[in-house]
Image (cartoon, rainbow, N blue to C red):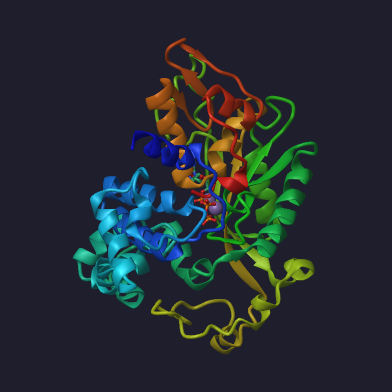
Length: 399
Ligand code: GTP
Ligand code: MN
Ligand code: MN
């Protein structure tokens, strides 16, 4: 028995950062169900439950074949009673009644629609729902003043809720490259986030920028943003300062997961012809079919193009969410690891570091609490080695 358990555990260890999780998922029917419950929990301020469902889903993502019988799950980690009930329901009935019920609930639908607006989090959506606002027209008719991010989010709602393709990501990459090279030749740009993990689509495009000479990257972000703005590539941007360097006693022990890099949340205006070379035919022929139960809000908000232009899909550009992060070269490996994801993989890395190694990992540094010192690293491989973990390449961090 014990040997059997050990064997299973060696195949599926309990921390996601100990496992190789590719994009090839043999159990989507289960992981989709669990992910939806995770999302619902997260939107309902129940993060603990959310993580539990995410961990359960991640275990199933790591399996090499489809689950066809509950007995196959014996000895697997992270599968709590609730998750097992969901899996059982799917196995026996083809769907989980709890998932179906959640999907159809007015509350969940409203939370999805409202948090689908860039700049609107679960808390805000919750507040609006309590006031009876369940849809975008209701929000627009309400007297609520939206902040700048939310205004932009509402204005570009359809574009921002359409997945970004790799081709579009590459086109954005070329623009970012041009911007960075114009203001600081010699700087380096790395694609991070989901696209670095090999995903074919994403909700945004993420880039990490650094310079091989420490310090040369200081003040880079405002210059890049100005360049982009002057060329008309930005529909929205909010840059936040790096406060990490500002503490006078040197780097403080990384205590929170809050990011302290210079970073920019933005919405790009991507010209259609900018992705000509790499364009997939699907972006051309997209006809906006009846969305699968998702709300459609064509022409909700007045846009530069006329209604007919929009409907004919002739708008010569599209809005794309882009995240830019600037890191000094000394922290580059930590930033790269911390921003490549997946979110669960990152969370598990930090949990492993804290619980198993008495270390604190952030996107800036790794601190060893036992030795009371920082552990340096100039590559992701070195960080995994410090943590006593086998190196997992980005394409296998899709937990
Ligand atoms: P898609 O964009 O949907 O393809 O997924 P993604 O994996 O790229 O997610 P996202 O762009 O939201 O985040 C990319 C990575 O950056 C993830 O690993 C996140 O954990 C990380 N990340 C996002 N926001 C923050 C932040 O504020 N601070 C830090 N340190 N990391 C963040
Ligand atoms: Mn991303
Ligand atoms: Mn992002």
